[in-house]
Length: 341
Image 1 (cartoon, rainbow, N blue to C red):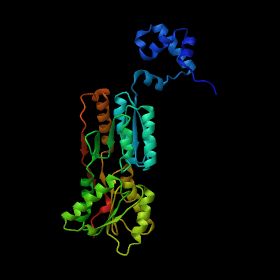
Image 2 (tube, rainbow, N blue to C red):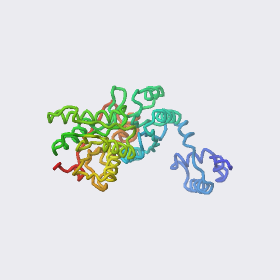
Image 3 (cartoon, rainbow, N blue to C red):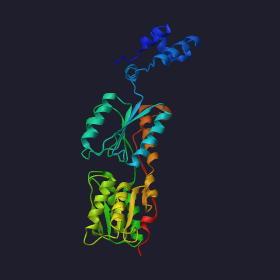
Image 4 (tube, one colour):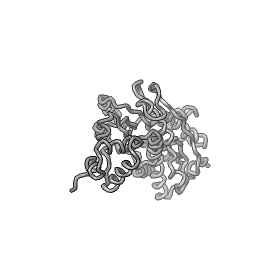
């Protein structure tokens, strides 16, 4: 394997000093036009790429922002990443996107990788309910912002959506449509989002004079389509089947919809379904899915801007104070939850 082209190779090919090559790369206006053209020609001819890690060591600052999410297979987190990437790019930074896959151990490994790379900061949707991974990461003194999670203390920023309000929106809609027996297809109980959406659902039931027994919870180990299909199979096996289902996210709802279609259960006549996130596929489902919309791209962009502000980067740089930004969800009604007959 050939050795990578270094700055000395470029200097030799262009007949200039290493310092001149460095100036062409970092301060091109300080180099004469003819010399600059000769160096750039050598760079292009040799295929030289400067070492970002070496540049970071000299400058003491990384141009990379880390983003660690629960599941990049979920379009919701893709939209979060797009929003974050747009804000970072405007500040001249790149984003290293990593997927914890809802695994506590993988989350710990990626946080260690971010520390090794000395990234500028991290946008993080935690999966570890104990908080041990975050506690360990704090020791590296790398700023981070929680995304889709409310910060419990005053030592970091967070950007989230009011999931209690979102859960209430979903179930209030079903109650108003006449449903009195509702299932909640949830997810890993350690996730705050899952718990908060359930709390909102119970609030909506209480408003209607219904007790918590009106909500039948069907927990799942993951928040994906396969888990939704599995929940659908369990729902079909219940002796007394609820007339409506609220799912903790749209992927669960789409899997549930698949299971109902395969079993010949009509949605919404036999079973109404409401999802959460309002991903692009929700509107394109065989039965367009009612969903609680989260402003995912806005969430990612705001989180990145808070991190840029804290690290003194780009147009957002100013005196920083940790704060919690809580956005409001919106119910988008489609065919999957038409009023019960």
